Length: 287
Image (tube, rainbow, N blue to C red; front, side, top):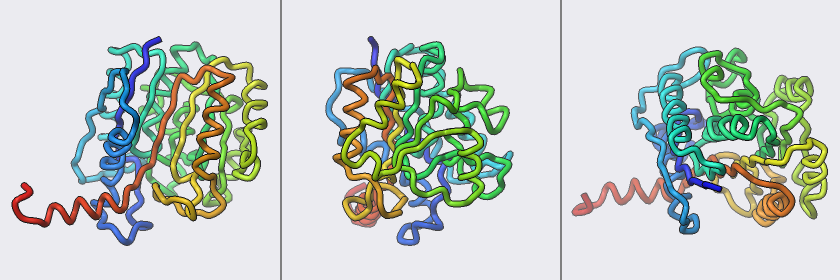
């Protein structure tokens, strides 16, 4: 079984500067890039091939079709998909980048395993916004709907496959942001488990996975699911999140009973590292 590590520093899907007042707009926008490289630096050494998806650093961000930085995202989707076609991996570890870094790898895996895939999306937010909502234009909030094959026609038609809503489970969900998203989740029939429901054991997650009949699992771990009183590694700071030990236990419990073929760690926003980088750039003799 061939596994690759995909470092995917895509930042264009985020639009978070307004909620990060301690950073400049450019620092907030491109913080995901530094976050992706930092995750790869901190991750264990691997014998598996590591490939970095080429990502534009152009901070000129034109909105098109209700999606911010639409054209760079299209181009980077194609680049990621071409890497996967060339490498033909059986399993993929993705280090992002904002949440949309899971879209291409997970739909690639859905095609590879002939849709015999269930998806566990560990996140504070459901990421089921649509471009036509006109409420938020960041593509990272549209990641799950894109994986389902819903959203911008050009973007979703370029994806290898889609995952049915009946095979998607949200874990740690606690911030829907608006009633429209709650209603949409109910319409799609996507189940969710709160942080409290998985705090002590993973039984409900495993039972749901068994009910899907899927043999293969892809897991998305958005770090804003984590409890901010313990750690703030991402943008989100909504209370009553999951502890680090709870997230790692859920993922490892799934791994003991199912074949995890895709694992993403996403949404790192390393505030301290961003500030340190800025400081170092201001010192003499370092360039």
